[in-house]
Length: 162
Image 1 (tube, rainbow, N blue to C red):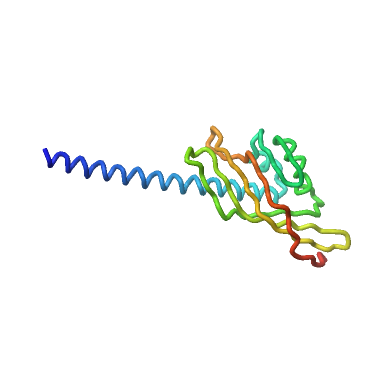
Image 2: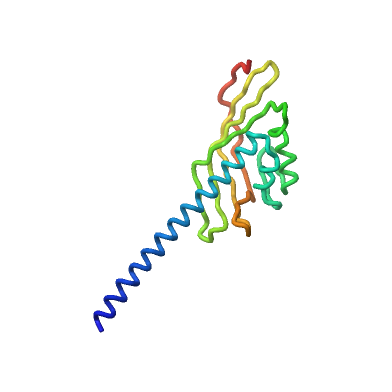
């Protein structure tokens, strides 16, 4: 009987180790999927791709930054200056932290942003800040933004755009 318990104990230990490893791999894969969604959102702004941008925003999303925007359509409207063909404002960001809720269906990204504004006289003002984006996994497995906020942009440089 003691051999049975030793064998069962070893088996249970191996299964537990395997499950822990699989959970860790799944967590890493989930983190990477959220990071890629954040980078895709950034790319949508850089490439003036409102369709991609809209696909990454949940219908009930809330954005805080330069005012409160509630709902996908209001957010797209409030971000329209970043999609204009003759835009004088550009925004880019990079996530440096991605965390996943234990439930696996919520996550957040935290990172730094850069805002470039061309003013009269072709001067470029660069401002920086930090952002927090909350993501929710959809039934399809994709991730959409449900909330976004950032610190007020802090000017760091002015230089001639020409």
